[in-house]
Length: 212
Ligand SMILES: CC(C)(COP(=O)(O)OP(=O)(O)OC[C@H]1O[C@@H](n2cnc3c(N)ncnc32)[C@H](O)[C@@H]1OP(=O)(O)O)[C@@H](O)C(=O)NCCC(=O)NCCS
Image (cartoon, rainbow, N blue to C red):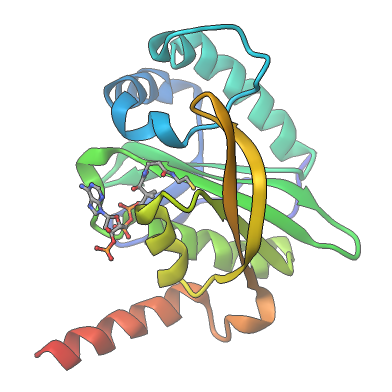
């Protein structure tokens, strides 16, 4: 069974997106374990889940069960679980989830990247590629990203790409030991003209030229 727009591989420069695969296990465990301090404050998990360490939650066994579940969701057209690569190495994930079709044609998107490559526009580039793919190939109309008001780096990402702020979801996700408020940002297909990536690259060029 295949779903619209999946599987897919996307690329711009050194930034790549492709389906996660079994041989990503050791790279995924290495990058996740090393980034505990960087990722921990922003990652949700069920309130009822038993106490466990970060290392336990990011083991090869956890990767295997995540990959099995995400492949099942992708085949059913409910998710697009991308591995994020930079210069050919696995550095993060961009996951389109909660895909709802019919009159809604909407999905949520989440992302993370290795601190070692943060600040180089890797996630904005990846998210722009994914948004264009979702609007063109998957046929979605709306993409939503929910961000904690404290997460300055992630707020920058959605604002750079022109996501619009729609409001505050109170106590929206269980993260780092409590229910956390999230700001909801959305992007609509008709807002992005000739594409999110193209628009963002043009804006970067213009801001570079105005500085010269
Ligand atoms: C949010 C995140 C995905 C951004 O990815 P990125 O590829 O670094 O995105 P950018 O390069 O556009 O950087 C975004 C902002 O991060 C901040 N930043 C850059 N380098 C940083 C660093 N080394 N440490 C902390 N913040 C940094 C800057 O404010 C930057 O904005 P600017 O470009 O206006 O200066 C990344 O910071 C991350 O993975 N954070 C932890 C997980 C997370 O928050 N996920 C999202 C949950 S909603």
